[in-house]
Image 1 (tube, one colour):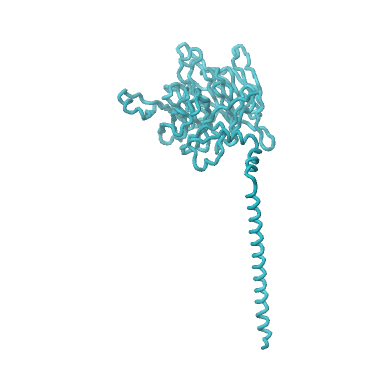
Image 2: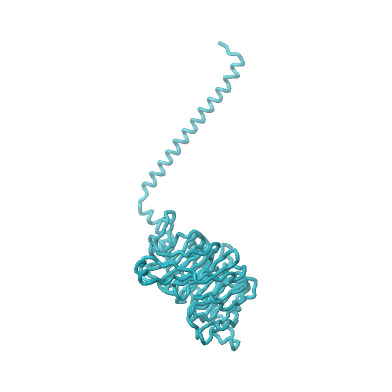
Length: 445
């Protein structure tokens, strides 16, 4: 039977389409069998590898990883997401539960209590490696946002710096004394602190940058607590911690302050501001032990750029400074300044920190250990430990927190841990955590 030309044209494209489908299916089947065969060959080859090859590969990794592994152990307060992370050998513990970034912290003089800001909490540190800590929470006045804390001489008294709609305020909270009968009934409960004094607009409309307190023990000082509040403007003010009495003010007369700190004995106030010079004042005490006057006595000149942070040694006779010029300096301030003797620069260390382009970076924070041997320094979320004598790097935690470090402090006394007494550094961060770190060991040569 003959087909018409119309029917021939209709079946011709259908035949071509059918041939194409059959050819594509054949190619797909061929590649499927080929890939399955290769996968089986790879599995067979892996299965035949001797087990010691894997161990040899692990042993060939850099020694720093082996060191971290040998010192790491399970840490308390570790979430499920953190279980797979490798902890730094000096990482001792983590305080979690803060609902916001922690921007300030401080220890009591015996190191047994730690206060943190934002939601003000006071932790009892019976064991720094414990899985849980007793703490009390201080309820601040409505509209006040805590930014700094400082203990008085007595651990039961705490000064809190806060920001509010009118500017900055200071509050002092103290535990209310209880009768013996009440104390016997509430031994397991921490006493609730009560507001004892309040100072509003302490720096007009300016915020508080730093808040430090110390016991005045120099000369004829009466041993009471001196608190220094440094504003983000140019002024620094002193207060009596126990009663809130205003003791005097200083002015850096620069564009803005970076920070200010008291010497441990309450004799000096040192401030870092916009320029490269550090200004130092002396607190003069009268025969009755009270503050008589505050006198500017010296300047530390030598840095080429702004000083970002400074701290005193435990004897109050030396100052350590870090600058944006890429250097750290140790100064002797135990000089006869009344005879125009200038402070002496004892040592200059280059900051051992560079970015990818080789440019020297600066340190954001510094803290000197109680024995004046170790300097803790930060840049962003990186934490380093340096030798005070040589400037040598003792250890580094590149990502010590999940956010920038905002504050740090050494416990004044060794604290109990599961491994015995240890010198402890506490760091706070934008990641809402506070971490405890043990001091590094010095290399033996």
